[in-house]
Length: 236
Image (cartoon, rainbow, N blue to C red; front, side, top):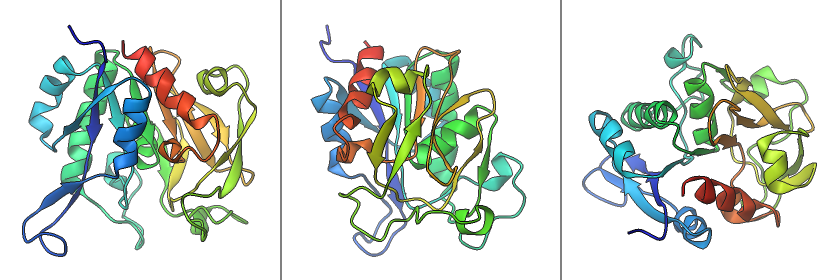
């Protein structure tokens, strides 16, 4: 019998060239480290959409990670991709299938950065394709300072799951994104940046379906680890 819940972690992917002469998967170690520190047993999930439901039969929770790419606007009615949009169709197809399978089985889902944006699409929501073009006076959400430092603060909505988890109305966060959630579909917004950009979403109709735009695996704010702890505990 497992004493740690099995947490499926989605991977990033790159084509042949650069580091490898063949296509390859990769992910920063701190995603896995954060899950382990919270009491989970992380396993990596390759991009096979046809196997998404089978994976969800085995794992106890799903962590959808971020990366330097975007959700295809065609999946949420966003029209033609903005010139700054980068697509990874194989990854998105798998992550969307896995997220929908997790929600259908009411298994916990935590979406981080691009994972939050994908979760919003799974909720029936929409995205901002390029923040500088759509948000007047926007902050530098692709922060110029290192990702190991705060980029800005977020305000957390009282009474939400996120508020209960972190126990504070504000958090310092890092910021590495040019897109953002515009609408949360059937979900609710639980955190915003000072410029009004959505920084967190959740779905009260599910046991645990939470997305954050920042990267809590860096533990920039002392409350960041509690997000992973709550996710892993919900997966037991």
